[in-house]
Length: 418
Ligand code: ZN
Ligand code: ZN
Image 1 (cartoon, rainbow, N blue to C red):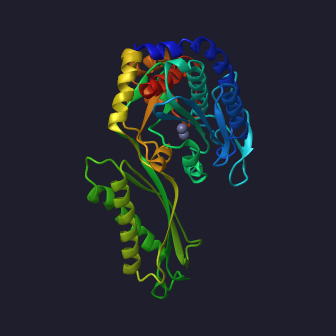
Image 2: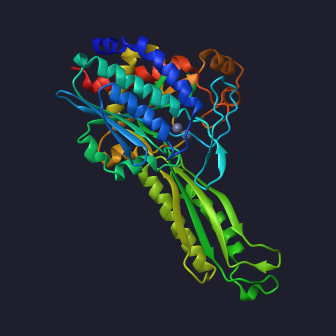
Image 3: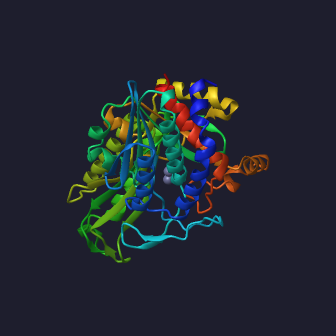
C-alpha cells in the first residue's frame, strides 16, 4: 500500500461514526428526483464545515464543492442523490415510510432502492478525509452531488446550469455505484460498462372508418402490426452478433371498439446499446422502417417520433480505468475484481462528456458476504439477492460504507498524490 491512502484513511475511524448515523437518516428520509432539497442542504452544510467552497442549487438541487490545495490535477468525484417511487419492504429499523407527490402529482411511497444514499454518504466521508490531511496531496478536488439520476436528466441539468464555469478545467471524473455483489469488494471494467437507453414514442397516422368498410380506411392497427414485426429485424439483421443491443416494443395502443377503425396508433419502444454508433444505427433504422411502412400503407400523414428517458452509454476510459484498478489492487488486494457488463443505464457520463474529460465508473458491493455466499452455493443468487430498485434492496451498512469511502479516496489519490 502506498503511503498517502493509508495516512488519509487513518481518519476513517472517526468519520465512520457520523457516516453511519448520516446514512441511516438519509435512508429513512429519501427524496424523489428533482426534490432532493433536504439531502442537498445536509450535504452542503457538511461540505462547508469541511472547508469546501460550496455551490448550491446547480441544475435545481445539485451541489458542487471545490477544495483547492495547491498545484496539480483536478479530480471530480460524483454521487447521485435521488430515490425512487418504491414502497420499502426491507423491514430495516431505519426503513423509509416517506411519501411524496411524483411528477404527475400522484402521491407515492419513496425509497432509496438504488443505494444513492450509500453514494452520498461515501462521498461526504471521502471529502472530509481528504480535507483533513491536505499535506498528503496537492491539486483540486471537486465533489459533485447530482439530482435526478433516475430520470436521466439530472447531470444534463447541472451542465446546462453552468457547471463548466464553476469547476474550471478538470482532468478526470470518477463515480461509483453500489451493486448486488459481496460488500467489501470493488469491481472495475475498462470500456463499455453500462448501456445507453432510449425510449421512443411513435405515432402512426391512419384514416378512421367503420369496421365494415375497410376500403375507406387506412388501418393503423395493421400498420402498427407490420411496424412491430419489421422492427424485430434491426437487432437481429443490422447489428453484429458480437455487439449487444435490445429493442423492445413495450406498449402498443390503438382503437376503442371492435367495429371502429381508429385513425392512429401509438407505439412505445425501449432501446439499449453500448456505443454511440450502435445507438445511432438503431435509431436511424427505426425511423427508416417506420417511415417506409407508413408509405407502404398509404398513411395520410408523416409519422411522429418523440424520444424520452434518454441515458448515454457509460464507456470507461481504458487508461483512466487501468490507473484506478492499479490503485485498487494496491489497496484492496484480492477484494479488487472485474465488473461484468451491466445492462442498466446511468447519466453520469453526461458530466465528463460535457466537460471534455475522461472518466471511470466502478461498482462496490452491498450484499452481506455470508448471505451472498449461501445464495451462491444454493445456485440462487438471482432469486435470493435483491437487486437495485427492488423494495427489498438493503445494502449492509458495513463494510459497504467503508469500502465506498476508501475507494473514492484511493482512486482520487491516484491523481492527487504528490
Ligand atoms: Zn437506479
Ligand atoms: Zn442508481
